[in-house]
Length: 335
Image (cartoon, rainbow, N blue to C red; front, side, top):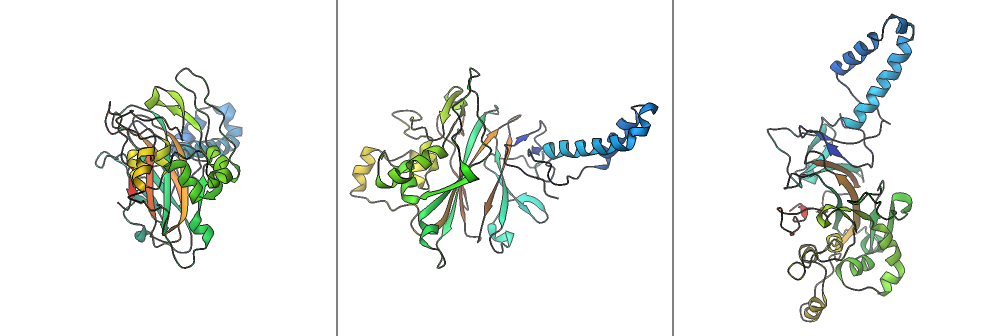
């Protein structure tokens, strides 16, 4: 049976069994052992409480179900014989959670909301907070209109304020109505791929894009509050990558950073096509996480109308090996 879900972050318990934080809006299964334990606890309250046993039992079992809803994710197949890997993805199927192997295995019909889980497991083993950038799209089809080809959906919800290493709150999270907004792909590319502070597209959509981004605690930057669209170089002049570049759909930008003035000069001779050319149903989703005992399991949902989508996932805090400043590679599915 699949777990209940919410938009809150996810963590894991010490034995590396993944844990989703979930709402209690759906019935949650619990074991006979937990039920027996609940009954035993109630009976041990003493004879004076027996007249109220029925009412207390009902309340206690509802409370227990709620607690389990917050802490149980046994359906996700993580165990000592198959240690979870950083960047590993799972998908919820009618028979439960399973490793994501191929979207074609899901037998998609219509445009269902598909639930995925992404494993964050820092190579250092140290706990951290961070942000996942989840980008999806697919090749165009005959039925796609201009909006589906030339706009991108920006999705975020449930983002809460972090505190920095001094215990001071990061900046207020900008308002983001209805969980999602649309901007043109041109504006999105101008903002994340190029050093272009002012273009026609950004004059129209720039405020929306900036409000999509927010501050979070970055352990990579010493626990300081850092924006998801921060343009500070990772290691100037050797590594010109940035947080902002991780939102790009262009592999070159993601791996090496946004185009610089020098890069733009060479584009006059070696033009680069837009990463949105020939694709549609573009989406960028952001999810915060906090690891516990070296692991986090981050759930997200995407509506898919075919099995031909590409997933690109970037961990803004991911680093290959301590103390290197190189980012972990973008997780791409299919590879």
